[in-house]
Length: 343
Image (cartoon, rainbow, N blue to C red; front, side, top):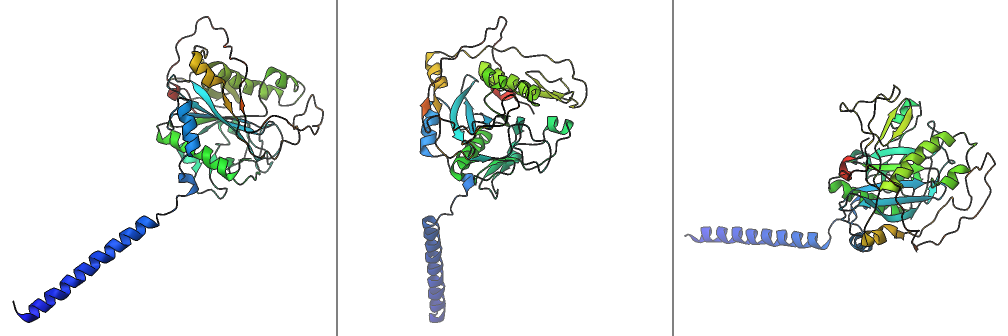
């Protein structure tokens, strides 16, 4: 080889070595400064994962959400291997707007009440309110009753104009629980939004209220879940909710038309063994601000609300009275929880 060729080969070799060193430097720099995860992709906190394990759950198992306006609380329930849903956590709602009662029209600043379904398309990872999911208002019931509005969310930032607003940290955890449930195979989850906890005593305060009949229907869904620990199927026909029915084979129901001849699934009431009963009884109450808790917003028999501080320990674990399932003479085994909740 001539000296000129040797010199050229030497230069080319040096370039190759320099390129390799530069590539290695870029790789090392990338490892040292990994891109920061967005709020929507933050992993569940270790404490939350530990609680999931202690309750015999899995991060990807289905969830169910209940909202209570008067108490300013949002509950997350998760399914276990027996197909029933067990309480996971109760989160404080930082703020919600309007009064008790359903949303009627765009601009009334009312937070919705009713039975709603959330699909992956309703998740809002890029929300200007940190993270959010859309409740799906107006649903078939709302549309049949000419109710209008849009973009009604559960989100962060603690500010509400018709939504349910959490702190950013709690919105992030709730969003992550929903995200993992979808990734685990849940096609949609139900959100039941109530004016208050639908006990007999609380509903009895409102016998003269204009929304009493509507709330009595919502209570059917509340009672069903309390008895069976599975969200009921809910259909809409004749401009009303019909709770615990099997939809027709065609799957088509006219929300404003006559109700078809429904069948009502029979399930065994929730009756866990001793260990599962202990898990079912445990209530984890997350501490946090409740912007509406200073005033009891309920109108009792048409009287205006009275400012009454709402007590109750925050950040505590509450153990309610033992669960007593309702009597059922011809109950059958529960079907898969994954197939019970259709919009």
